[in-house]
Amino acid sequence: MTLWTAQEAAAATSGTVAGDWSATGVSIDTRKLVRGDLFVALTDKRDGHDFVRQALINGASAAMVSRVPASVKSRDRLLIVDDVQKGLEALGRIGRERSRAKVCAITGSVGKTSCKEMMTTVLAEQGKVSASVASYNNQWGVPLTLARIPPDADFAVIEIGMNKPGEISPLACLARPHVALITTVGAAHLEEFADEVEIALEKARIFDGLEPNGTAVINADTKHTTCLRNSAQARSARIVDFGRQARDFCLLDTHQQDDFFVARAHANGKQVIFKLATQGVHFVTNALGVIAASSALGADIALVAQAMGRWSPGEGRGQVQRLWLRSAQKEQAFTLIDDCYNANPVSMGAALELLVASAPTDLSSVWRGRKIALLGDMAELGADGPQFHTALAHHPAMEHIDIVHCVGPLTAHLHEELPKEKRGEHFENAAQMAAWVGKEIAADDVVLVKASLMTGLRSVVDAIQKLAHREKPMDE
Image (cartoon, rainbow, N blue to C red):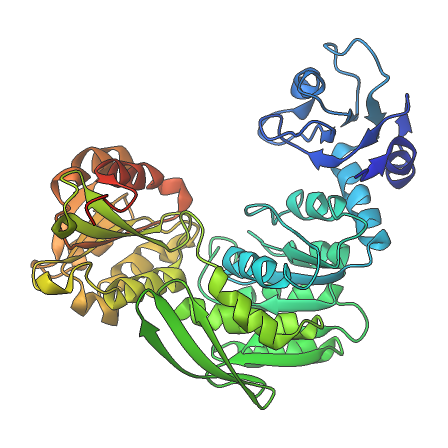
């Protein structure tokens, strides 16, 4: 399906174009480019103009540029604009304007991507869904997502993030959502904010972009709920809340059933029951927020609740894997919780609680398995970073964790604060931990790997997975 003709793209961006081409997609990365994409030569860490020739060789229908690269011999497949970033924003703006889709924008200190993926899953059975890829939630990710919305999409799910003040409002106004969901507010990006109140106020700026009669979906269980509610009211939004203390979508109870969490809630006065193919109460709260937001978009709640069981966390975001050591015997199984993509004090606490709640892999040997935490630094916490890491030693979940191993300069503060019986190894970097970790894991252990992405604990997860068979042994 054609997404942009040359003439449409030129009109949207006020650019000049030669040739009669059409694009079936939009890309900013030659490594992920699909034949037929319009390649957008953004300048970030690298100048996208250096990759235009490769993009065209790889099958790009055309390239959006602000100058003609010396390596390109013909202008026939170029869209020339004054500024590529502004050109992408213009493409996203028109992409949103022409779309008939119901749009939900999602932000929050924790759970943005998980909620986006949940919503994509549950809405897919009620219409065609277009959504942000990976964590494309910044100044280029949001317009790119909007520029990619197919004309026949019924729903669009847009993730919006921020690193500093003033970033959310322009993106929200570009997305113009019918529904805006804030998952929660906590300590994140404190290098750029004075305190959590400032973070809450910035998150609430997502309501700036709400369409007339739009709906603000807010977590009723945070200490900043009143702030979020006031911000939504100031923008004349319809307010829907979710959580254990909510009036609209109230979580009543949860229980674990095999590898599922089953939850019961009141949804606008009616009972709804849903299950999640994962562990962790924080995922249940996120799911309830998604149900509330989906309902506000006009989706059938019963179908949404039914579809929720088909979602599971993605790689690095709380994914739980049962792995078998290479002896391939049943008694040699252990559990890995892969949560290495991101971390802040809120998500770290939720991950520790998930570790504690995780059942041993073999109930017949419950006393042999340990709960092991492999923790790396939490980034962007500013001057209070050391204190936040020290405080983790006193998190209630720590009482039930057998041993904690740390990596990075900030977790040194946690390592020092831990009681001796829980204090494991401390490593300067992820490579050292990855080389060592095979000596630590034994049958029936439950192992959590959690850190901010910059710590590089993906290598530790990879090392753990290499110890094991990913699939069930044949003799089982």
